[in-house]
Length: 301
Image (cartoon, one colour):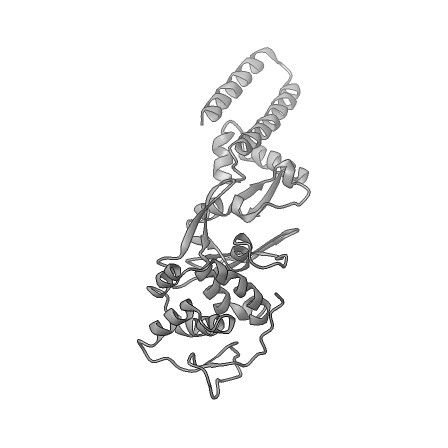
């Protein structure tokens, strides 16, 4: 903030002094436009010095308040052409430091909190993005996943940036973790919430076979306490049936599976397909989870 105040005073002094001395409007325009460019560059450097990798339009207008919107747009356009800034959403921009310039994108944890503060929504990084953060899964993911509340958001696909957004109707009361990154704290699903989200959204993200080995690795990060937290609020019983079944497939003596089963027994539950399909209904089941195993599960671990 001190920089912004000092910068505005300095520009105002430059402008007043130069206008008194100069009788050549064209020279003044060129001089002042060069000064504007310098100020935007300084503003970007200052943001990066504080590990801040995102900025919105209103912040830009406040930071360089002496300039017209036309001038700000012009300087912003130039920074975008250079690759110093990437327009992510309407009036929301990523600042790309030199160490990420060759990739043309930023790790999602560097800007996701700023993005959703700007959008005014709850969020958490989830699905395969959370899997990657926990060190599970050995395949390179092609897109990042964020779950949020309120109305649906359009996916973002710009050059090397691919973001997919999923709306959550029953917002988690627990199992969202605050994790520290280079740009500050960001929110991410716990291993247990990540697992049920993967199962719930399986048909949209490549199917259960793709994630089976991932779930095996993810269970190593799960704890009984975390499962208890999940069971205290999570309402998708069919997903809990599938999770319990898979936990038992991985480990017949799983304490977490037994905990889930005892929870399900409190109310009646019904047969479900392991992999949901619109044109198929569950048939006879031979396991305590009432899961109709309609796919062949393969692990590549």
